[in-house]
Image 1: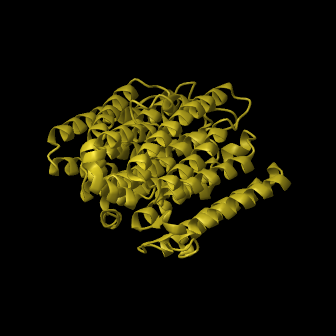
Image 2 (image 1 turned 90 degrees about the vertical axis):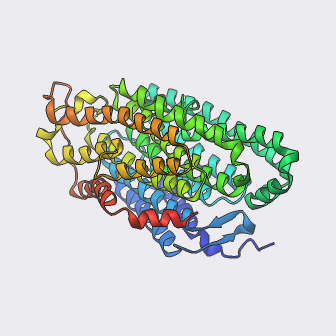
Image 3 (image 1 turned 180 degrees about the vertical axis):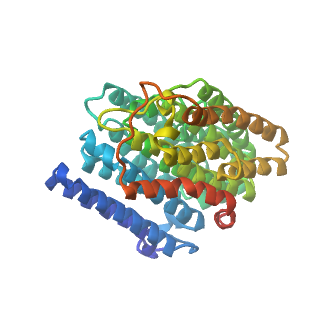
Length: 479
């Protein structure tokens, strides 16, 4: 049994985030709104140092904390992208938070503690660590959604998310208890070994446990039929919180699903594949169909997120190294797309006016040609139009399905992608071909630094579309 402090340097990214969250929490007690810049700088510096430390450890593989925690290429890659996406959320939300007088210290502190939970999840090597990480991820989000106390919609959304999240956590814990009863262990590697030896004797209890585990994780993923909280939470939460929820937590949710299915339950694919198949088809199909009829942008992005989770699940459904790599690649890129898409809504909202409907984007190319061009890149990437990276991500997951004889599922996935392209292109059409109405919002003054970061975020979708091999190679080497 390894010591708790062996290889503790592998937890430096998490230690940095924890220290930063504590510093921001304490500093917020002694600083008023005029010192919000200091808190912002501390939070972003902590995220930058955490991402850099993960990059320094890139490629190393070892365990720590007595085997509860595992450092490998996949976890390091996800931590880097989690830190980037959270940093983007903070940068885009800075001006908005100041204008509507939300306590920035609360937003940054809760966001950092949730980030810590995400990083714990993607390195979890035990069911105990998985559960603790999920709770650490979820609890701050409940408070973040209700951070605007004067908003009835935000409070309603927070209660819905809390109730649904509590049910999901209970189902997940119930499934874990059955796994422990069947295998006598909480460590993922030991669970895999026990399943390999006693699968025939424990097949019924393992099937029962997997249904509960996948249902619990389905809530965290917002995969249909466990999606009912997502549209209301996206629409009801303050836009900066919606931005935060839409990006980095998706990486953590898919990451923990990959860890469980590839490490602990790799020997029972015949049990979990049918559940993943159902969730993937329903999410990709119904998610796209319901998004078509939406006029509220945040609800549209909620159903869009559901459909994209379906495509990530298609990669997992393939149940081979190429499929897992495609799923990881898909969710990393989706997080960048979601940060850019909802980032525009945050940047354009100002002085109490919210960008909520597609109609408010009419004629955007005349008011801000550059912003319209960047948003067009994001929409084309989400729709899967070449040469953006969204085309390549969908191609990879569909190819993984075809290579494993899931050809019919791949055909359905292609049909759903064509349906999904409609509502993304509708937004582009509204920006470029429709005349602005009275509901169109006047663009606020955006700082050059924020605009530069947003431009890099959007243009990266073109870069990864034309030069995908480095990131794809790292994803392939992760499994």
